[in-house]
Length: 558
Image (cartoon, rainbow, N blue to C red):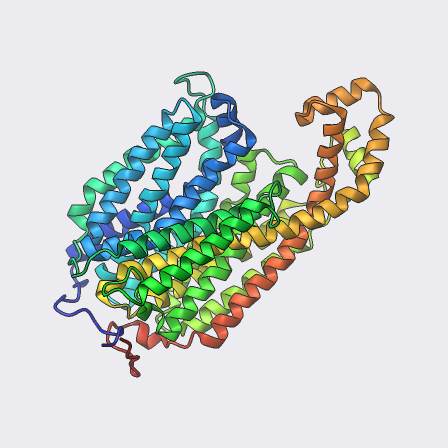
């Protein structure tokens, strides 16, 4: 039986009456608020990390688990979350995910120790893994193919793309608020507590505006769920560890995790070929356009997420922006990706997705190349002069002419990528596979982001360390000749405790820009690799996206 079949027995939603349009509008608001909450939570706590560390007395290594723990649970459980929606009802799983997310946010907001906070982040990831694929599947099953669905996916894609930037801004603002709950620096707790009313209200309103999908026959593939979830968790953990400068690709746990993940995923694939109701039906990949969409959505967000990581550090470490100011520096990204997604939702009715997404990837490639051309004076002498004068190495870098144009171009390009690729990734998926199809798409984004960050962090660390080795002797000699009082002032300013740490910190600041620009350059090639997949294999026509009917040439599997 073909997987390119239309839903039987489900009447096409009527969108001609104002009442029905309003109902669909509220349904989209609920879905997109949930998706925005899930996506921005990956970055909203970043700016709050120093305050959390002081409040809960957490080490730097454990602090990273506030970000990593969420990503691990989210990325590792997406396939399971998608399949649960198919089997037991997508609205039910959507509401369960939102409720779990809200409860976990409440626990995190009132956490008095690191164990409770890290546990809450893991539960947040579980809630997100349940809600996110269900949200995407609900768009597919709620909105009719054509302009209505295109607009819905445009809003969804805009929320997904803008969420990281919104998280940085919102995190900086909430963390800076003067709130006293347990002590005088409790603003960071609001980055968790803000999710509680949003998640609960969205879950309570879901039955009113979202129709429940019909549960599909079948049993949960428990062996596949265990092997697949454990495999994804191991791979995401290994890639995240590989991208951390303190560990890298040669670390024993990194190698062990990646190897174990690959073995478990191979076992998962073997299990899936032998069970009657697999967690991941391989018919999902039988359609060439869908497979190309999945592959492209692993490579393209990888470059975008790495851009956020390196550019946010460049703006703070090299240009000297405060965390909140750095967050607002990404505000144009959010605005431009919304503008782009809105325009693209209309173009998708008239232009094939290959051309829209293909041009978007080229725009994003140019933006990354522009970032790779950022240059600052970074010799040992330059570092000493900047430190002595109280300046930052990137003081002469203009945000308006060297950062803003490329941030905007990146957002316009990624908006042109996300909308058509989301459409093509879930188009013609069987009704009973909508959840797992959405789960695969989200998994590709999460694994791709971890892979991209690991690769580009390795590149960045390599070139940063090379430059540090060149300038550190000069920096050390120069600091040794400074007045001890001046040295003490610099140590206090940079938050270090010894002259040796001061040399290391200044040398790192001098070497970071070299590592970041090389990482951006490698990001160009990741983006171009995704572009090649789009141009070569994304061959579905825009007329076909406007209908749920089978393709002209059906692909029969199974």
